[in-house]
Length: 89
Image (tube, rainbow, N blue to C red):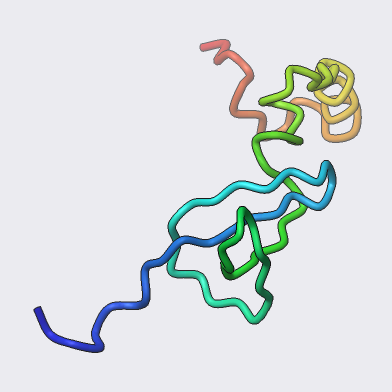
């Protein structure tokens, strides 16, 4: 394998700032920040959303009523050019 062709693949700490959740994984991401975790120093990547805080993974996602949006679109543009309209021919 050629030297200096691949990025440095190492352990990195990702810190979810919204819920103060940290996890260690391997990555090639470059960062200037560092953190000491369990007596070992790691590069630190700050993120806003992770599986610990994302509504899909926490089960707290909200159901959005899209029927109102479709009706609003049809009132505004009518049935002209609608690909969802059934052909009458």
